[in-house]
Length: 221
Image 1 (cartoon, helix red, strand yellow):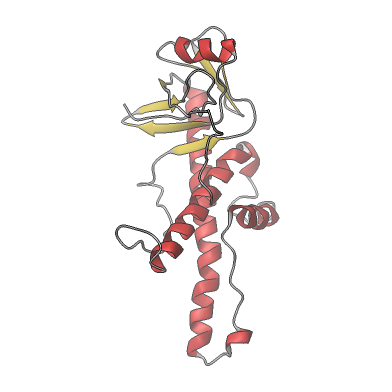
Image 2 (image 1 turned 135 degrees about the vertical axis):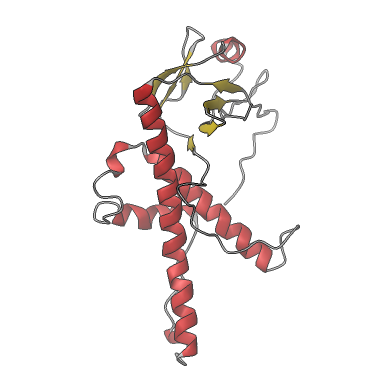
């Protein structure tokens, strides 16, 4: 999966805002982050199943041309496969509509990146320590995070709230004035937003400079 690259003359700068969600918004935030984890786990299982099946078939002496086909792990391929099963798969059918599509896209994008990293590491094209095959994330240990790249993502004019898809308008602990001023002046725009839960708090940050495009994403305190 290709990394984001700003256009010439543009910079991406991060801003972080601590959020102050009400009880209902906290439940929705956790649901979105859980949906991202569920989509990641589904993608890992879906791709890995074909790998393990091929290995088993090889031990049975199945000719290479007759082995189970590889399953692609690019983000578009994962999206297409997920959209086919989400209506009928019992793991998603009864609740996938409760969350923004961006929640599931977060998990699928992370899975695509994980498989890319594994493949390039295995082929010796990635620097650093050898990366293992992607594994499913446990509910107890997985970091709560969800990224939004489409839909309504904005800083409200009062400088005290942010609005995110399906989550609505959420109050912030600190003023958003610096970023808001640039947005209102037309010298920046929001590219994306990420919400993340760390040390008992929810965060959502962003990036900006004059004549810059912005990426809204959270940073730990």
